Length: 121
Image (cartoon, rainbow, N blue to C red; front, side, top):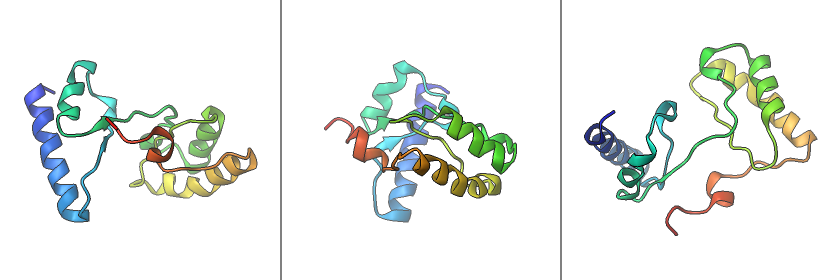
């Protein structure tokens, strides 16, 4: 997307989230990861840090809940950021197995900000 289109989408999304929740986000996850490095200033001018993931089980392809869980558990390590799409029933069905597998390894879940911090703090 062009810089102008990205900027417009960020503005509209920030406004919609703030209206719906009363909270203005400080992190931005680019859809599909489609965000050029040179577009970073577009996010920062809106007070947003850019957040990427390190584990992508490709749950959007809906390969089945057991495959999603298996992919997450195979790729996860301490500090992993796991991308899951909550709009797919298979992903929701995979979550208990993912949590059980991570807990059995003595991993703990944490909100993004608790280990990454605030952008531009």
